[in-house]
Length: 520
Image 1 (cartoon, rainbow, N blue to C red):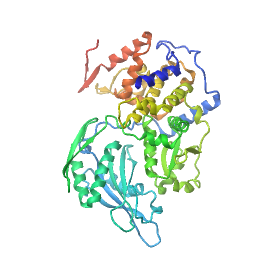
Image 2: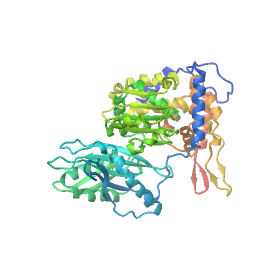
Image 3: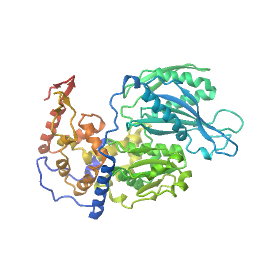
Image 4: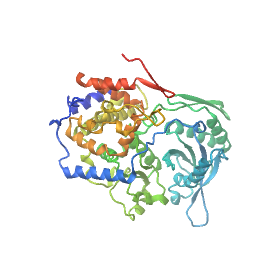
């Protein structure tokens, strides 16, 4: 499947990919699809202006967690709708919390207390629309909380109707964790719902067992034993994905909500770090589509405001001049029209259309790469059917397609990670800085003029700065594997630069010393 995807990109792109690394003159090959030069200049100016407003990025990729953070989740709460007075809208409030006492640092307790004040609004952003019902299918959705230091916590929610015969209001079971593992927590919420249907008293002991379970390493599975009346002791297996940014994301929801052409226009807008607002009738659609769009950006990380489900009380956020990805329930659209928003792409997921746009979204991506994306994604189900039977086959095709897109675009980056490691004032090795990356040589090595022009803009984004910073920390993952495959396929004249890069990778840190591995 990966070979087929690579073949389609190579066919669309043509044989010539890069100049020789030593070459410094411009190539005349390649067609320019930025016919409107002023539009390109305007994009470049806009991205540079945004960078000045927000400052250089501090990558959001977290390092190793502290020992006290090594738990599957931080806390678990139940949120219900309360009627404060007759005729007034319902208000969401926390009715249960586990653990009850937060035995951590003062800073953590203060942050958690602040979060507990706003989380009910994320659990019920549509509180004003509710009335008691006698039937309601449970739904799963999620939201994101951003801390003062830029770190993110995920709220995984299951909204369900308590058992009973009369009309009643739903309640939300919410797990707050630092881990972005949607499939794992969805499985936990399945077990919560199963126990809630028997007795609410069974939920907290189950969650205590989850919290006490050993923290799983990426790609590892842990087992949790728990007693369930009528079934005896159950053994539940929980697997933490190797790369949670790619695995277990519901891409099908995204493709069923947007046409392929519109999806790629949204994707292009996000690459330029524009303001994008999604709207839908259902919370599950909003959160799934927002998470799927962010996953398509891999190996890049969205560095700005990210709120998949925005409570109406926070609607003013969409007036900010900085980039954002925001999800808004359709019921809040009338309020949106009253706000002074500018240059925001508003995407209606329920009707597969744009409510507002900048009108240049179709000309942002390099033409040949966009054509390859469209061709493969149009055949995604056919390609998925050729894979071994697996519920994640479609997601694999989609993620590998976008990974290849980025490999074609920036996969030659290792050839330009020069400068080596430096020492700090104490004489100890320090992390390389962005100055180690040969930016202009990297861009000029591309033969396609349309791709070169796109990179001129894209390289000014915080996403790109974060990407380079991570790679200078010797990050290794799926993208690095695919990039190496790409570099291995380059002509021999360019392979010398690859070998130099590989020698640079052939070492590891041991304390403050550098121990080289054997290289052939």
